[in-house]
Length: 166
Image (cartoon, rainbow, N blue to C red; front, side, top):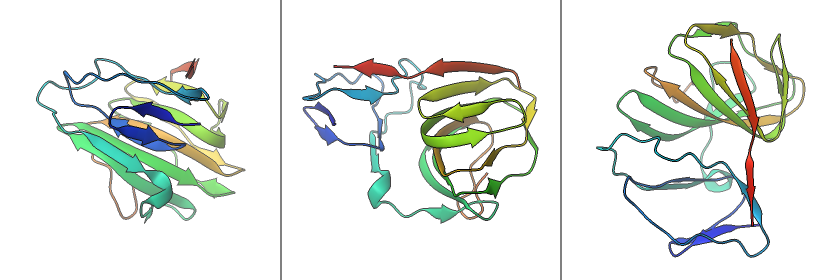
């Protein structure tokens, strides 16, 4: 199930970052689920990014079982995709400037909530949690002010479901 526009077809687990002011005619032959965030970019950020996470090198995260693909960085904003192997345990940490996480597959947990495919959370500045994955999990993180480290990569919650489109 692809999302398409005049630039091409974007399959499952594709990351697309359109520049400010861009326009397109989107469509999907069979329907698809997308996470769409409008008006979220800084005006000076004019980069257009396409990343196929199935054909991109994943880097070792900060703990065993965690892999990361950097997606886009501009100024103080950093976006990356994370893959959590079965049984991955991360250390407790604080999101000093907040963080948004969208779960694309699997099950991800912390001491408060169990997140499944399609969950989206926005943790407030200063929120703290101890995440882990008893099962395989994939998520996309948007972080402000803290650069994501490639090798050994880097709560009050708003929890929503993704938008489905046809």
